[in-house]
Length: 379
Image (cartoon, rainbow, N blue to C red; front, side):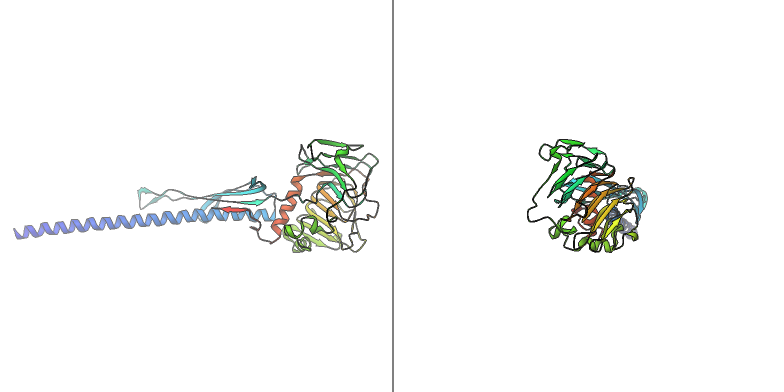
């Protein structure tokens, strides 16, 4: 009887021990599952964050980049990145939206399937801005004359020069006079009624303004044109960006050394009274032709097939023979040829998109970091 009791007790101890061991194993298994789940969630989140950063890096090099990534293998998972044009807090913006996935099969046995872990992240960049100094397709501090077949159109256009209704500006704004000769035509958008007027001769009086007064005096430098210190452009900023080479920017005192098509900030600093004549003016971004005397000349914008998209800031622009999509601002109060803006078959087509794209590029260039000027970033 005593032996039988002992056997029963031993069986009970073994059963209890087995039960305790089973529960301990299950607890360890559950703990391991929780650790794996947490780790995979963090992996997915880290991959999503990296995807956003990769998108920002691409945009720092090319603000027009919208390709994104689809199921890109990365760090043990995959990431999909979308780049979209949107708004954020009332501002035009570029959204970089990433979703990441880390996949697992079964854990320990086929009955314990692990769920895929998903991570999300998004960030918003300013798309760019239209400087307050852009009063028209052509803004100058001197008398303006148009001849030949020059077309000046302050109506809005997209990056390819296609007309966009009711969102444009004046064709010409000047502190002095405007004369229209030859077969040149000027058009624009009435700032009050938003009515568009196609380029014509004579130009509709709602498409140009003359003898204007600039409060505080007409801006005298490229940096003041893009907003000055209040916008992060202390004197010398555009020149420094050009000298850095970021985003394809170039600085030179000799235009023959420039590489085309132009990109980023192109800053040509000429000697007093110096001229840049007849280069094929293809490219995009912000083009500056300037010196301290405000008498650097850009003459004969050639050829007629060349297209520049963005913002031109030129001391003394003479003879536009190519197509400018964006805007042009002249700085000189005393132009070399009575400011004959054009006497050929060129075009200046105002474009909010082209200007905003150009200024968006330089916003990211201010610090050289791909996450510079991010408006917001969420996990």
